[in-house]
Image 1: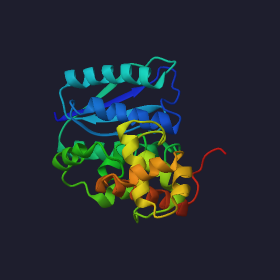
Image 2 (image 1 turned 30 degrees about the vertical axis):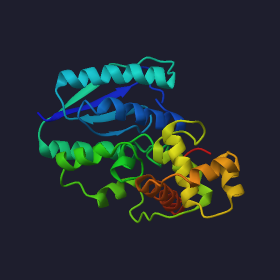
Image 3 (image 1 turned 45 degrees about the horizontal axis):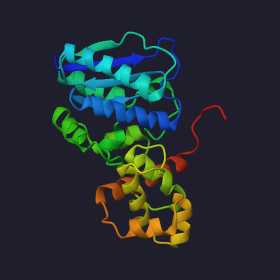
Length: 254
């Protein structure tokens, strides 16, 4: 036995995180709780969350309980969770299959609500979201045959090219740090705003207007030190938006 696939859902079957802010918040909760529970991958397609852990059954059960408590509080969920379902991962081939299945679970269920994979750790594995770099090492050690090419296929952007585009910059930067927007004084948000200023070679008035700050703040950000990993994540997030736009709109209700 290598670990467990943990599946949680709300008792009434409604989507757990139906909005972008909720999906990004969910990802932060899973990542935080999973670091001490052997987290490898997770994905929320719509109404149920899949998490792969390398740990004992007891630890997986404790993780599921803590996760449900944290999500109900963080997302203000009106419904209770159904009993968590724990599936034993028997051996290495099983683990490799489960990791692939969980990451592409949205495709399996025909869900289209989260094309950017905000409610997944695929962004961390591809360098599109900062703060979870430890997951790259964990997955590389546990599933050494998993290749970047396969992850890009699951993402739906096999030809992902980092690019700068002011039209997508603000949301891409927020996604790169896993926050709903670039408003506020959270250190990660401040760093993301500064990264946008560094990347945006344009008029300070335009940058200030896009970020919702004054020109003095833009100048202060410009004087800070760049963070290469964050800038790369933002450019990758913009590239993802370009790639998905080229594919066309998802098939969902207008």
